[in-house]
Length: 108
Image (cartoon, rainbow, N blue to C red):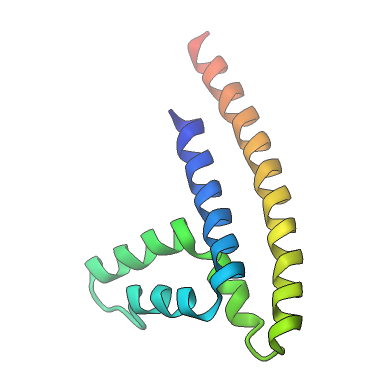
């Protein structure tokens, strides 16, 4: 169960980053419309946390590359996406190892 949630979060981050690579600014604008700028109340803060956990890494890096030209931005983001995919896989392996270790310790 916990493994599935971790895999879902990491996969959704990578999938949204790949969609950003293909579509670009249009998807970034939809992401920015779905989040609140400076929320003061609990519900908008919760929504921002949800969107950041599910989609946040791709738009974060894509915003940082906005001052580059189109081709340079796409190439840089492709390398970021590939690193993100490898890092997500490694994070999943490490977290699943520790979760299995904790669950096996608790079951003894």
